[in-house]
Length: 184
Image 1 (tube, rainbow, N blue to C red):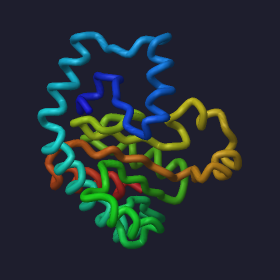
Image 2 (cartoon, rainbow, N blue to C red; image 1 turned 45 degrees about the horizontal axis):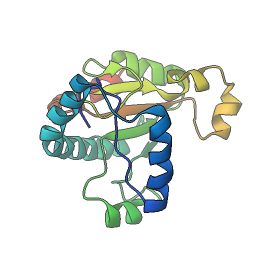
Image 3 (spheres, rainbow, N blue to C red; image 1 turned 60 degrees about the horizontal axis):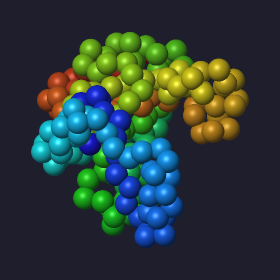
């Protein structure tokens, strides 16, 4: 919500019966955040609509670009008609989010693409103003120590890349992505 990758906070929305159970646990664990963190969330909420518009628009353009690129094996983004849940996403969402996941052929190609990117930082997070990118198989401790076969059982192919799109200029992001894919 803050949009700057500097806050861990959230809100719980749900059925009254679920909220009662959560409220009971808050009596034990506490449910307030530090004043400065609350300020950062408030600051971020003021620009959330603008940031989401940019995330949605740029991510759609990136997904469409990747889908047409000859070196890209697959693109996973609910805003593409080729996505298996496209109709559901279209009915429920007015934008499709800021994360585009895509595949190239091999782990080495994925690493080459990620390393060649100039705009995004290599990190496993999402929703910030800056773009972040990672090789999925290498990004989380849980996946890093798995064998390729174990990752495939969890639908994580070796060449998978997760790209969390920030609010940088869309043309700059597309140019950066193009030059990175040219490296493989």
